[in-house]
Image (cartoon, rainbow, N blue to C red):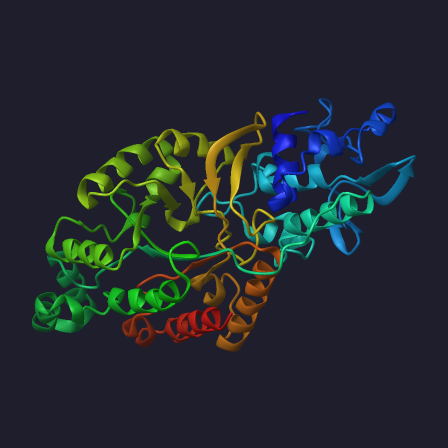
Length: 437
């Protein structure tokens, strides 16, 4: 069996992967092979050499459904062949399509102004299931079909396996440099007010909201412990493009104070690889090594600035740079399940079907995705309700919840300048909700 197919079947089985599929589950369209297995998932033509990588490999809308779950390939029927249950719903190819971002290698010409594949162009959004981790739902179907064949399996009770409270530090300070003071002067605040901003204590800097954020994170981690929750702060160390501004130094007093605070709260530090590194992934290793030298920590976690992981194959260089866990896999345009799953999954390169050692942690929801007019443009009540529905889906699937809140979106200054006024309130409400569960 192809290693990628084997891995996907194990992934779908989840905690039940000890039920070795090589003797219980077959993936073939050859009827002469059916008798060897309890259950056969009948392979569609997706992996056929004449189909894979061609327009014929793309699912057609509207999608069929199997037991209420959208199906990308195959058909919604099951047939007994003697003691073997043959399932014609090709959930293996369907899961592979979503987990690998296969769609993006077929639609190279579809990118936004930052080179990202737009979430609202994705099949999950266009087919209306972006809010559902249907790969996890395929796993539940697979386990149910196995039980029909007499295999003893238990369905795990719903729970969130792990909560990642993550924060991208794009702008840790509002005015802690001469460049910032000049900016405020040019905005009309006057040189005197600009210098007062520059000289004020760090704790009064409106973007330095880390004491509040780490306190909110601690509420969750204190209750759940480190095995089930972590705070993760992604810091920048490179980038020269306009999209990488403001550039900040972690060696200066403000940056050193931030690192000291994060160490004292036992937060994990990750690399926020720059916009430039998204365009040229060869820069990632240099940025990671720089952050290791400054922080004194091993850096193994990454998230791309602007969520700009542009091409699926770019992850090869992320892995070579020493990154073991990536947290980029969400759409900035719409919150939901970009990879079709709420569980961490090893990256499979759709160019060669290689199963890598790099683990992808799907991003569930980002603060600005909910509020910005060019994205979802939700009100507070709409955003809170949408987040609760996503949390419910993660819980039902037994997955990870990965939340992304920026330190500057919870700043009182941002609110006064016309940004959404409720990001701070929403984060507090969501952490309280997680404690109830």
